[in-house]
Amino acid sequence: MQRITILGATGSIGVSTLDVIARHPERYAVHALSAHSRVEELAAQCRQFRPARAVVGTQDAADRLAALLRAMGLVTQVEWGEAALCDIASAPEVDGVMAAIVGAAGLAPTLAAARAGKKVMLANKEALVMSGQLFMDAVQESGATLLPIDSEHNAIFQCLPKGYGRVPDAAGVTKILLTASGGPFLKRAVESLERVTPDEACKHPKWVMGRKISVDSATMMNKGLEVIEAHWLFGAPAERIEVVIHPQSVIHSMVSYNDGSVLAELGNPDMRTPIAHALAYPERIASGVAQLDLTAIGTLQFEKPDFARFPCLALAFDALRAGGTAPALLNAANEVAVQAFLDERIGFRQIDRVIATVMDRLPHGAATSIEAVMAQDGLARRAADDVIARLDRPLLA
Ligand code: NDP
Ligand code: MG
Image (tube, rainbow, N blue to C red):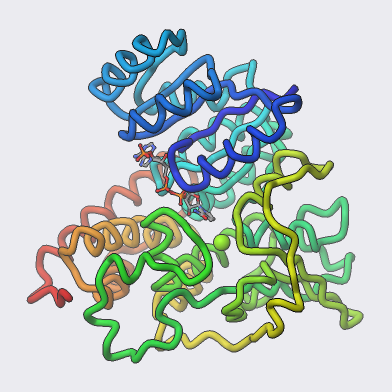
């Protein structure tokens, strides 16, 4: 029986994780669940999965959750704040941690799980983008098992030679081919992108996801963050990571070898597949996802990404090449800009302009410690707020 903590249980990845866990009560027990503010959803999950502990974002949310759980007759211990998140991620009774908080808020608890040597199932790509080498060092030092949940990285992990977590020359790996659906605006006239609404940007053609990553998919910053994520997870330099647009999202990524072979992982676009893979690794369990019917799909298409249409993708490659804290600056500016877009304070095409301005304005430094990274994160957030406040006339829909 593996005891699992789910950070971000009420989100899209959290709900899919609980769906897979519910199918295998003989293998998994839920030790702890976390949410930020959606306490009713978290209370319902506590009723079904009976965790020992539940963590929320504020004292007020904790009081409301505790009242709901009392009324249900549950004895789940309710806590709040970052220290409690780090504690449920690193407690001795925990075997595996699903890191599925969105954004930089997930860094501290995800790192706590890595330092404690847990099986870390990593959905929260922002944490790795920000902390890169520091995070990988923590995994190495503690002997934690790091398993990618992001569908592309999970596919790459499955296509790499067994026993290699990284891209080694000796194994004949020449390239990582990171597939991208292209999001909802792949074919839309570029001029019209100025005026798209948050709801249009969040309507992804293939995946159902939280709003932040949905906007990242529409700008293709998501793919940019994934390039950086692949760099750290698999030790691949930028020039050996190639982005390939594949609108059907059936191939989740590929690895090419020096003998001409290209290995791919295929499946229906449903996050329960990588989640089940990581939960059971190195075994396999049922995920609830329907078997792929290739003849029903018929055609798989591929094209090169258009960096002019998706400037965020170029910004991410630039940040990876710059190194140091540049990816942390990129990530922070992106989080602020995406939130401003979702709040209808800026237009869609102003997201990349805000990020580019912040990257130009702030010099990046060496990522010597988590404190240094967090300081840069704070600087970039303030700079992004400042850029947004000075924008002439936000171009809204
Ligand atoms: P959601 O927005 O659906 O869920 C986010 C979760 O994090 C919720 O449980 C939310 O709580 C919690 N949360 C939000 N803000 C905070 C905070 N400040 N402190 C603590 N907890 C917080 O996101 P997704 O599930 O879509 O994505 C989660 C992560 O997984 C992201 O990093 C994303 O990039 C990554 N990912 C997601 C994929 C997907 O298919 N959804 C695919 C690949 C990666 P509450 O509900 O209370 O707000
Ligand atoms: Mg992905």
